[in-house]
Length: 77
Image (cartoon, one colour):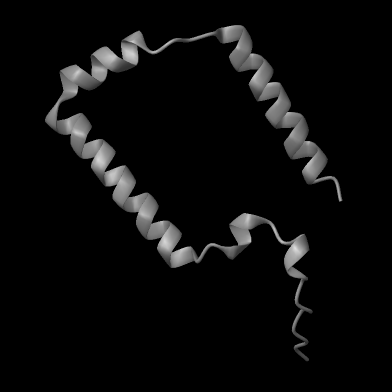
């Protein structure tokens, strides 16, 4: 019928597995609401900051490629 999975030893757990889902969701939702409230309250300030934010298209492509290979390697099995 139902057999529980064995517990994984702590040394093999990823740190994100130790985070409680409710607390993580609450913190992220508060952060997102605060950031969007700032964007609504001071749109000119945020727009100016984002327009001045440095961009490097080649570095972005390299980072996306690294992320792709990392994802593929992690999901091979």
